[in-house]
Amino acid sequence: MVYENAPELSLTLPSLELQEFTLEWETAKVDLSLYIGDSPDGLRLTFEYNTDLFDAATIERMSRHFETLLKAAVANPDERIGELSLGIMRARTAS
Image (cartoon, rainbow, N blue to C red; front, top):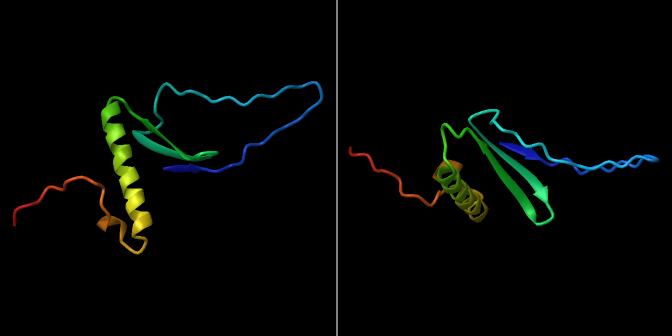
């Protein structure tokens, strides 16, 4: 998980025009990464993942679970993270 909160910088030089661009990667650097950045509308989350290990549906489901976890953390700030709900059914083990 990476939180990117560096402010956007502008640079003015005589007779030179600079323009920001985003690099697009063809391969994931690691199996699964979550990049979080500030945007005018709030936080922007981007998953980068190895497509040999994950498909788009799995990542979408994971992002919904993460959203549920964040909402539960805000609603229950004193709760241990392992006790918060992900909004999924947990398998029960027979004892």
